[in-house]
Length: 541
Image 1 (cartoon, rainbow, N blue to C red):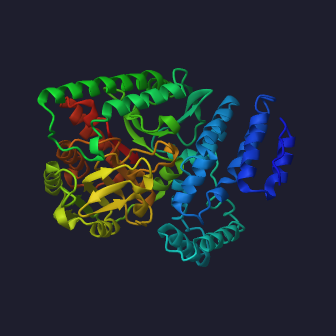
Image 2: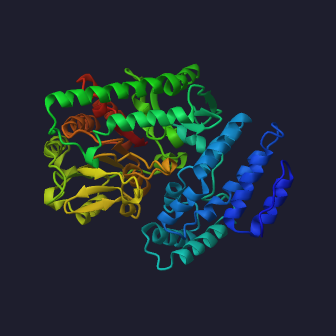
Image 3: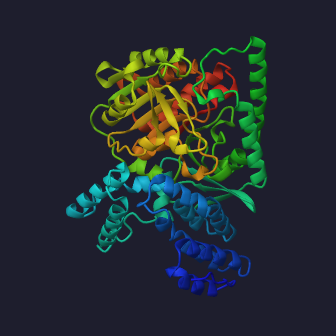
């Protein structure tokens, strides 16, 4: 069917209906043309929102689970879902439809990430026979073991349709309404950041029972966001040299080190000051006007906001910051039941990945010793040096609820699925992590480099190592935005685990954000350079 022209109002719906039998990407383009042509003709009308709803209804089929993750990634990139989502959200904000903006966010951000979570469904309300079949099909798709992935995905979709015909299950594994998404803010406000050419905005979900709140960000433009990203890249290039966890000593002279540190410090200060003035400060003002002055705070940045150190712009911060890739992933982590049995903590230290590998990490050995001195023996497993091969580490991940992994790491900017942890004589890649099904997983500390640095081309898809472990089943993770300094590992680990295991307590994933906050405060109190304390971030509950 040839592409038909869409007019400004109701005929857009008619043309979209005619296109339903056409190529899926043509239908997607028609829906977006409908939204674009309707915009501005009737400001009070919901025609643009209906057009976006029509477009987003196509996403599950265009990023079909029958395809591999890389193929789905390519479809998401080709369709331009990032810009479409930001445009849909901006349209909603202009019309005062903040709840709809949040719903579009949930449908358009982290598509592949969300699909991974859907392959680990809560089937407690599903009849036993259907529940067992759904779990089997989902596991085959998740692990990539299906002989015919397309056939398995189709069979699973038919089963879901049958499940949804039963009373109370009509919306099973479908997009959630705002009333359900707002539950993500039950332990503290969630702040969503959206960037668009027409303007940048924040949306705060203060708590599950409140209306979403709009935060205009007049000082922010897409160009300025990119400028801040560029400053960080330029100043922190030395931190990321080699894409590895940085050894404590370098070959630079003392004078060169001091000069480099001063330049990085200045660049970091500029970015943090800009973030406070234009983003974090305005958000805090709105939070305070709603009686929220301290406690937990979750950031959900999208587009060019992703990767900026929003958590680090305030010297004496009253909030404890976390990040989440999607509202759905935060809800999933909150509802997952913690094991009643004592947690098994695996400490994995790889000082050197083998012959011809990266620099020796002296700090890893001391880091492991610090953790071993804090965690009771029966709760501890240790895997170090030449024993920390990829297969051995995978086994530890499957049998442990808590994991501390200290090693070299790298983010692949060309193919994010190849981002990897450098283990002994082998790598653990993001693609392999996303095929793991870790039912006992609670928390992972990735004391490596760039484990929370996303992909520039698709920042909304959370394709980094920390996000991969969250998708695989961990409720919380600590990662780094850029290379951490080797000598900081033991300091952070000691404070972090001392807090979690204080007074003989059983550690809780929900306490890990506070533990990281205490450790980073210690680094700041010691006046270490910005580039050493800023990169640590917390994800999840």
